[in-house]
Image (cartoon, rainbow, N blue to C red; front, side, top):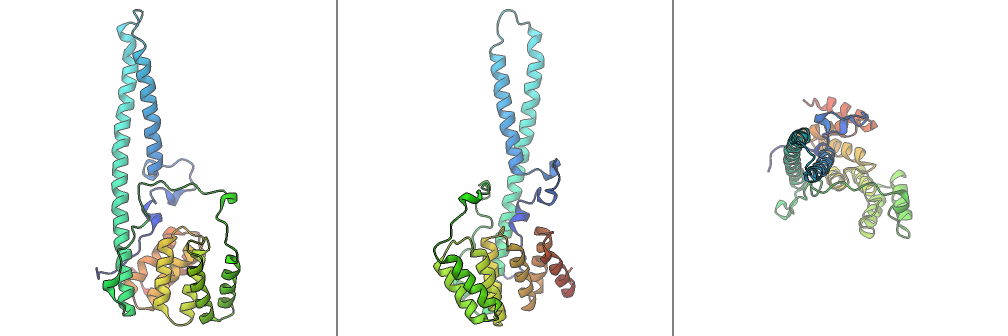
Length: 277
């Protein structure tokens, strides 16, 4: 468990088609699990329809050769269905292996941070599976009208913490962000609060604590609006702690996962400065 830790994000787990999202026709290698399952459903319905047609063509006017082309078509569709089923199983197995590996790497990184902080590694709890249940489809984005509503005072408390951070009051900002996270668990502003708390701790000189906050924040919200900055700051903090072997792959993932983010360029420059492989 003490081997060099490296980061593998959720986007890489389900990144079978993500890097080429701009294309309108995905290739076979880029097809997602949802695409394959959709094909399976369509083929299943088609087979049932064709079998119903075959079952109603037993009248005396039907010649023996009439069923030939139809049966050939059913056989062809069933063959395609078998291939798609095999492909689905292959993709599911691959996703499970990547999730298992990513979860292990996060656990390694948590162990390393606790060890650096001088904490009790025996008190570490089991790492939550990266991405949750891999078989559960990603929920559709909710419309703005159904977006979670902020509690009374929630936005004001967050803005107060942010203002303190921007004013250079790192200690006060850290305290306000901690209070915010305690008072509003599950807040839609939680990813930004984690980022802000980490920045405040780093400004106070507590880089190890900041890295832990960013690790927890990104693990819990890998698709948040500020996930790119959180991931970059995590890698940068690990580099500052001398954990180059852990920092290099995490900084590389910033560019892989968020290629259009301005932090991708900063991560690349940081990797160059570290002489990452």
